[in-house]
Length: 301
Image (cartoon, rainbow, N blue to C red; front, side, top):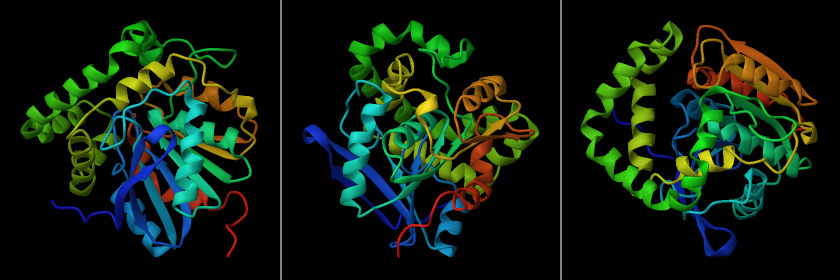
């Protein structure tokens, strides 16, 4: 099925002459929600239900590509919190005073970094099956994300050519993408199975994954490098309210890993998404948005 295009889509200049691409949904002057995609993913990884809810409730959702996906300039940040320097510029260019953030999986650390670095502007954070720290006092050991640290030294110097090659492979396999998602869904819990077989969700997922990787797929590899480093802040530094949803059948980031990370956040509430795996948070996007909008003060009129 065909999806409606974003209300606004383009790229913005950030530090060092680089550019970040974005897609905007909902009301043009609504309260802002920055939506950080997973690993892999891109700016259009915003569920159709969330897009419709934003339009109906005067919200403005901005899906933001990380460096090396879509038309965003490839770049490796020093650490996760370094990203917030670009976010501040994006917010200024898009006339955003205050914001809330949602992050799926690998997008989770970026939302927490924004809360730690910009507490006066970030009113709430929603983490969906987020990746936990692997270094420092907050480190959660084990799991697939922790295993990625073994490849970090190689990726640090070779992530750009590898990412360009990965993008080409994804495009070659594009005709098989729908079948691949169906095969993945077949081995998931019932909740994720239903989600991945829903036509609108499947169309969104394919549009984002294949379209975002049309030129490059460098961002996922850069993410893996950054996840193997200290994030540049401690979880205890995040004074902003956080709501953390996590599937109880998640094999990529186990439930216990999410719980350990959330326990170290001063104002976090951990919510078990029963019967769901790693993508389940995308299936409850309306709950996520409505919950986030109850956190913090409303943006000034």
